[in-house]
Length: 57
Image (cartoon, rainbow, N blue to C red):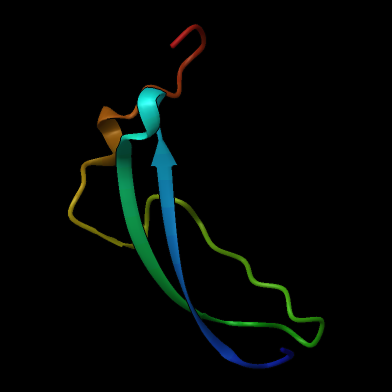
């Protein structure tokens, strides 16, 4: 799938399988079929700051 437009859905899942964050990205693959996305800047209805990503969380 080189140089193709793809839609991605990214979920951050916490204990018990509940989604803490869900976001969507529309992006383009490179010549190798790979994509780069930055979690936290996609389209989302969630507040990513509530996800505990600190040491010991």
